[in-house]
Length: 204
Length: 114
Image (cartoon, rainbow over all chains, first blue to last red; front, side, top):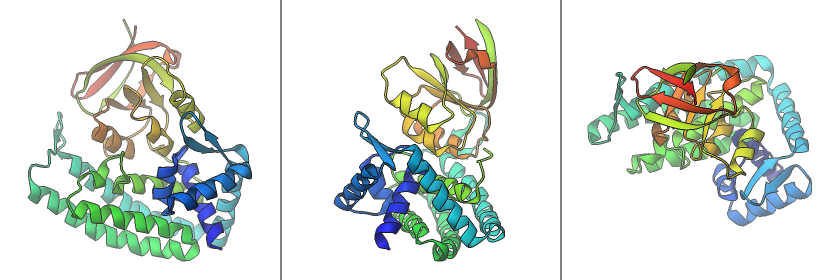
């Protein structure tokens, strides 16, 4: 059961990211490195995943892509399209607020030219972090609802909580920096995951 | 130089020269990652594609046919200081050609064929 769940998580991470190194897969799946490497070796052996040795990145094979599509289709049927639409609509309300907040984190005045936030005003940053904390609580309620349908979504909740903790502890990169598992990175991936579950393309 | 496209400039970012290359699928992203070719300006239809993330450190700039200045791509481009053109209209024939991307104007970015 647990192995199946981890397998589903890793396949979906690759579906969302397109390509990923082991360290990214560990972060996204919350698995330890050895367990993650063993799982990836098994997925390669099953021809669901292949490794580009030069790039040290894993990608889905055609069979792997079809497997993900079939798993998603099964979950979509289990939840039901109307309930999914309702969950997605709730997410999109949060999404608009989150993007507005993330943009405010980066830009203090839109301009043109934009006035970038140089993070020299801790009160400005703290106001944004406080708003993010409130948004996080609302997202948590939504993710817990989806998590009851598929435990795969609980890994997002753990990643969001980790990013928020690091941000609150002063690691400012954990809001929007794409080079770490930042709150925005995770949000971006969750959004893609939900669109996949709905069977939709992103509109922008 | 002939202008072959324009779009919303995310932020003033000077000028860059490079090969205009379509990146609309994860496979195209992997191909680019896997080669040591000339510097590339990425051109994508999908501003919200998570599969673009691995290549963002490798390209000179990114041009997208969609997107808004509060969208996911804009947030990532701002963070990386990567020149970014949103809602761009570009002549399809420019794909694969050497271009000059002029992001000096505060509002509008312009794309020229070299």
